Image 1: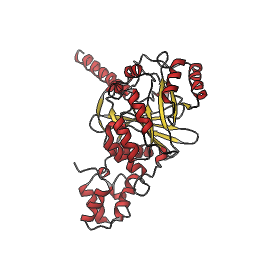
Image 2 (image 1 turned 90 degrees about the vertical axis):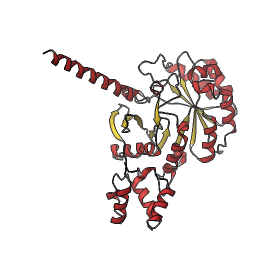
Image 3 (image 1 turned 45 degrees about the horizontal axis):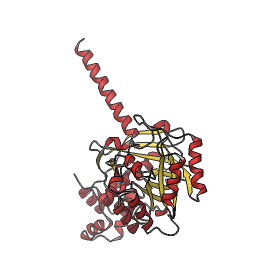
Image 4 (image 1 turned 45 degrees about the vertical axis):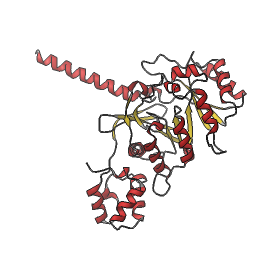
Length: 362
């Protein structure tokens, strides 16, 4: 199989063109076709010579993700299931809002971190995504939605832990933020969410200018350890101290994500503990009412309980947002569409087996 040209770095493409004695600006043209115009074939690259297009065709391919399923919610949220071609699938969610359109990207097929409330965690980790597969989610959603409303914001908080796939995630971020040869997204409009891999967090903040969101979900070490196994390797106090020391620019804040689980972490005492834990950190807090999914024992707090939790933090001087669940009617939490699709395949298989059995005895 020919190598996927989207996997070449800018330097690698420059070197390939130099060996062919092509002018250096050709690299920019090729990458613009791939990442800005979404070319699916080299023949579309009409400002390249026929000889160069033929050479590209001989040596490289342009791989794409295969759309396997698409669901649209009453609130406008759209969820996509993509087939990676090796039996693995990933999910991508498009969230339209009044002033922006956010695309939630996956960085792994499945996840190895086992957070107790997460649908993706039940699948385990299948594999890391290549940088091109992360980027292809953007390109395919653009094709499928025909740019009705262009994507304005990107969040890497879909399936998987981005910082556990650091090199490929970083490579994809470079293309996303490259204004000349890449997709041209401002780093201010890209947010990466992590369970708290401390060394990679520090590296990310040193090497990029994207926004950082840290999945906290508990303000006490024991409870966080129950909800998030990663806490055993990177305990809560170490995570918070790392956040205090990160080189965050003055105009930016760390976002702390906190899934509210009824009767687990939503009490006034939990709010007070969270306030004490984050005191002195330039941050904002995203409260996320739990999005129920089949098989989960957790529930979301009532609206009044959520409001009380938010008001306590407000009174302590924190910027607090409540992220309203989106796409509940299409099971838009990560991992749910894949589980639903797998269940449907199993039901279809059982139906086929049943029909075969019936015919055998006719």
